[in-house]
Length: 235
Length: 142
Image 1 (cartoon, chains in turn orange, purple):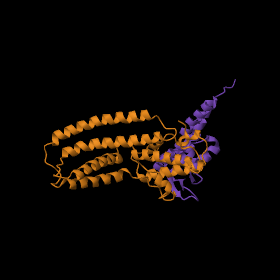
Image 2 (cartoon, chains in turn blue, green):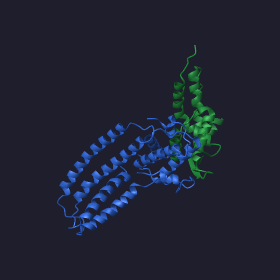
Image 3 (cartoon, rainbow over the protein chains, first blue to last red):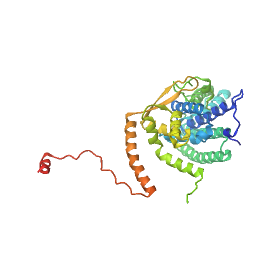
Image 4 (cartoon, each protein chain N blue to C red):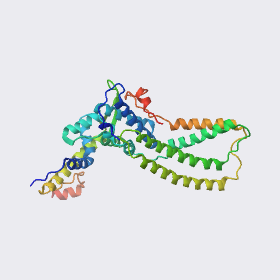
């Protein structure tokens, strides 16, 4: 696969070079979000990258390296710990689980749904792992779709092995939780299933909103609310 | 006989040196006044440090911002994205002066070692003047 710098200069009506820059910045934004960087701070970094690339007309790969590595160096420079299992990953996993279960309950209706602490404690670790794996993998897959991408197989293997190990740990946590809390009474009120479904959908929507927070560009960067900023989006 | 080094080897050595001196150089570049990232990279290149990539420059500037050595301000550009200007804080000015003094000594020693000339003696300690109590001062005067 060719890098952007290997290709011919592109000055046609579609501005593919600009699109490459946007895609690159989008990939960095994804990794910064995975690392738990607040939207204000990631917006600062991305706006500065956009300004630098515009001034220098440099190829983003040649200038910054891989999106994942550059995002990590920015996170380290900001003194932030590497924490892929952050709020966003948790929100993505829990939100997806809440939306799925809420939808099933809403469609099924019928008798009230019992909800035990054991169920909650069992579901949340798996949902968190699923969310974390999905966000990390999603970010790496996004890199692989860029020109000059890193090795897809290696990224996938790393995430899968990490997720497998975490799932085993979550299974242990769930087993312990079921053993300790399984016999307790339901913690959810005696209401029809569709009400529970709606409540879970609301939780899922709120979590999805947290998980999909976009970078917030600083005032003065000229990017607030711009077409460019709308294109720098998280998946 | 002179050794002919490959350009890659020279670039690699320069990159290694740059890692150690980039922050003091950034403090020095910002000492006269504020500048934005690309402008700083251009100044470093014009000075002869070679091309400093954005991937090297911005994390270091960001770390200096986190450490309180520089403060930043965004300003809108004429067209397209605005620019983030960096300027030294009072702590950054102190750090720049300390770095200049430390590096002057370090450079003198390393240059002497590389050239095989006598290493200059260390400078006298520059601490606060020793306190002398009035009794001892009288004794010294006698």
